[in-house]
Image 1 (cartoon, rainbow, N blue to C red):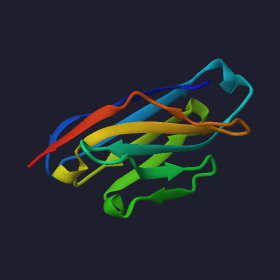
Image 2: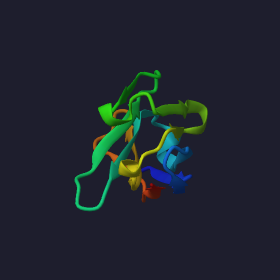
Image 3: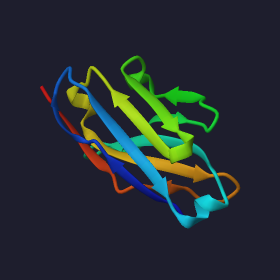
Image 4: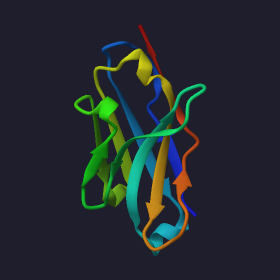
Length: 120
C-alpha cells in the first residue's frame, strides 16, 4: 500500500541529538490520505513500543520515557514525519520504525527501521 523510508539514525554520545525522518510514498496516496503517523522502537530482547504518534490534525502523544526530550512533527504536504530526539540516553538505543495508517483502509504500514545507538 504505502512505502515508508526512514533516515537519520546513527551513533551519538549520551546527551546528544538526532533527527529522524520518514517519507511515505505510493500511488494509493493519490486517492487516500494518511491519518496517524508514528515512531516505534525495539531494543534487543524487548518488545516493540510506541515512542510518539501524531494525527493529521497535529495531535501528539508520547511515551512517558521520552516526554520533554523528543518532539514529533509532520509535513502533511510531503507525507513526512519527523522525530527530533534531544538529551539522548543509552536506554534510547534501539531500532526505530516509522508507522503510518491510511484513512479508510485496513491494516497498517511499517518502514524497514533505522538504528539509533547512544553511547555512554
